[in-house]
Image 1 (cartoon, one colour):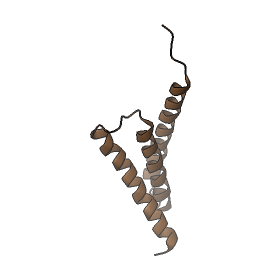
Image 2 (cartoon, one colour):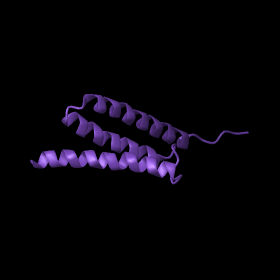
Image 3 (spheres, helix red, strand yellow):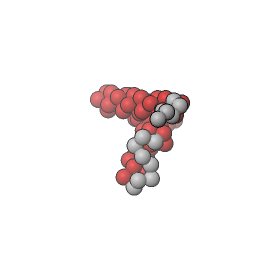
Image 4 (cartoon, rainbow, N blue to C red):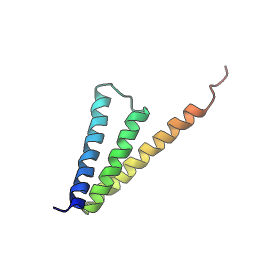
Length: 90
């Protein structure tokens, strides 16, 4: 097996571990769905799946993970915007 194929497979497994790990942490209430840690795990994990799925020609999986990654990036952008906004005055 070529080093490139090994790297692509390792990227796929890393993605699987990140997405599954994020979900396990969520279920165990170690992270919240709106936390940056949870969202970053999903963004990086789905990006890994995009690489692996695209390389292997699994286009439906790659497309799903493009959407998953975009959702995570959107959530991270909202988190960043919320943190920058000053608190509302009463």
